[in-house]
Length: 222
Image (cartoon, rainbow, N blue to C red; front, side, top):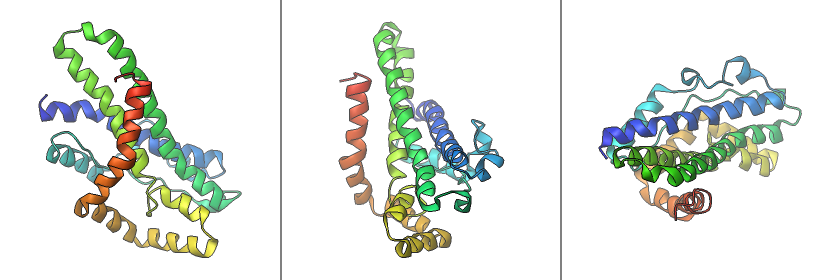
């Protein structure tokens, strides 16, 4: 399958992954008492509300450089005002984890679609079978990657909110300061692009086993 075909077929899974991830943050925050993101239109499946041009460029660039085997990108951040929450630390954590939870649910849904397609699609011509199977498989993979990657406890990733909730408040304040300074993004870029061993370890220990779980136990693709 040509690279350009892989990029095109992977685009729906990537777009849905980030749109539902960000919409889930906004919706959870709204239900917990903060309407900021909802009022800004972030509870939406309109890609224009969520897609970041630079993040989309990185998606295409990493797909090209990896030969269609890896993708890295991001969406516009969702603005949340924790002062609107009844329990700011807890509710900020819950609204943050809503994004990765949405990705895991999507991975499960893509796996179910793949299971159904494998049951009926093998009789289809090879010209159609392989591209659709790739699109469904990519939907699983990209959601697992986005969901787990965002659980890394480095600001501004969602896992940092879980870490802040678990720490005493005086230490959680340090996480807030790191996020406000933007240093966290530099750390993330450094880990992804300059310390490949970190990414290989995360993939081998966590990401790959989760993908295999969805493939074997949900999609029945073993």
